[in-house]
Amino acid sequence: MFIIYKQSKELNLSKRRSRNLAVVEPIHNDIHDFKQQIQKKKTVHLIPKSLNQETYIDLLTDQAKHIVFATGPAGTGKTMLAMLSAIKAFKEGTVNKLILTRPAVGVDDEKHGFLPGDINAKMEPWTRPLFDVINEYYRPKEVTRMLEEQVIEISPLAFMRGRTFKDAWIVADEMQNATPGQIKMLLTRLGEGSKIVVTGDTRQADRSDSDNGLLDFKGLVERYQQSKYVAGVEFEARDIARHPAVREILDIYGEI
Image 1: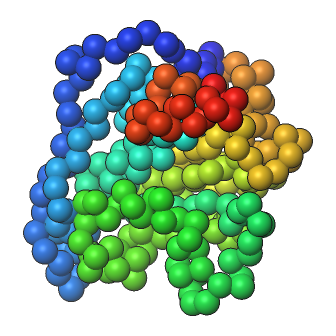
Image 2: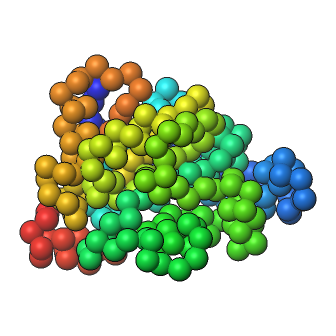
């Protein structure tokens, strides 16, 4: 039976141990050696700051759950924990590549086709929050090489149709700005050995509720109630881990 996890009890953080990634050696010319010997800047810790974050981490690291989605307000760790778990899975060899996607829709409905450069450059404004996490653990030269070798791949939603992602960890961020059709198309790209993490805040969409793909999918799964491979977490204001002012701002805007 499918359950969207929404919990509000206090978490005893002492029971959760940090999870580390192994340090590897500098870049080699061969891509196989490169994958095995990428050197990160520092150890990654997955430390929950709320009960919902603990549940989210459990789902992210559960190999039986191939599609995980997280909804809730800004600052609750949806994207950060998804990216940290992706890096962990890559370093442990659970997946061979990281795929990052995000709808190229903003407040002004900007189109990436008008921006200069290749697809990585065009998508950079939308994927910057994802790379903010990557850049904390990899050197700039390593990130560049990972992009060149497509160990990290930026894939706009429009370019995913017809593809199948195998042995990959896909992070789909800000998906409240995707249409129901785009969400369905993305989730059906899942191949063997892969995991898709879908994040977003259904209340912060640049689309109407009827065209909000994340809200639509969340409702469908709740009604389905038989999912074996899909699980979700709904974060609340109490889960906000950023500066305390963030919670106050959301309260001012009536979102808490």
